[in-house]
Image (cartoon, rainbow, N blue to C red):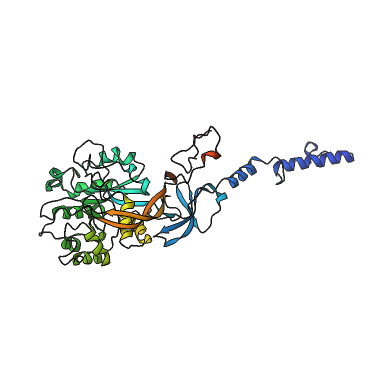
Length: 463
């Protein structure tokens, strides 16, 4: 071996000890001991990753009701990065950045309201593409609703205006049924115009926005023709989406039984099922046999309460005969928001008062409507699903519930929303259950939340 590459020999005991120590120090620098006082950057990063919380938000001790996953039991629900991370009997609070005690409350998927009117801000009077509609954010999170479907306010001619004006600016998730009328729901002048009901451009617009336009709507038609329904079904077939029908004025030439047994396809939706305006009950006071046959064919029946589409004298006998709604919805607009229909929870209360179980009502307000509009990622708490959650309280007392004509039914229970989570972040908190007591904070306290779980009061991120 060349002399310059050979290891120099230690000529004394001290020299040998020095050489041994030097070799040991080199080895430690290359292969740090787990007992080292100064860990390498690699081990420090691993330690920090281990210390980071697994979950952004943990809802602990609530009674979870999830129809898709057949859960009705006390469970903890963990959320991470906007998704459901775990649902289990016990999860460790030490694994969560934020833990909220929801014991004694119900934890459900975010409610899905598939009949609302939200195309507003245009300034058009007397129009559901204008003043008759409402911005949803003031009506949704406070009652646990995280997703709405607009029921046909826009047609293919004005949908893009609706999208940029309202949908893209809303915190509530807004999906849409596209009206078969090209001009949308702008009043009788437009909605009675058969010449503006064209299946091809309607289907083309629906196909341009898959997952956002989730169906076709026909509504309010006053003539005897089947054309609005037939063209809506044609558009729905071309775009592979369901049709929702508000059957307008009743006509003997187009009875509701023929609509649901001959004209609609399985999966199409008949809304306003308890209105009594179109023969939903037969003259003897029983459910129209056509509706029973339509259900066997797979037609969906939706509540669509609204300001003029729900009567106790129709709903109560229908429910007693076992004709329950497939989905519960509000038909929210300026004419319903302060009338018999107050909000989504108020409509759900009515079905509790008529004898449906809590779990049945939740299923018809979450997973059922999500399936009806082919949004299988919504309405449940499966791991990996969008973390939309409602935390509800079932209150006991003396309450009154009112139908479209001002008739009251007494009730002993009602639902209140305590907390709403949208995409993993708290967006509504009625009683501050996610908040610290102010007396525990510094005298000059600022914002108390963290942006990883809080959309209301997140502290500024300091880098």
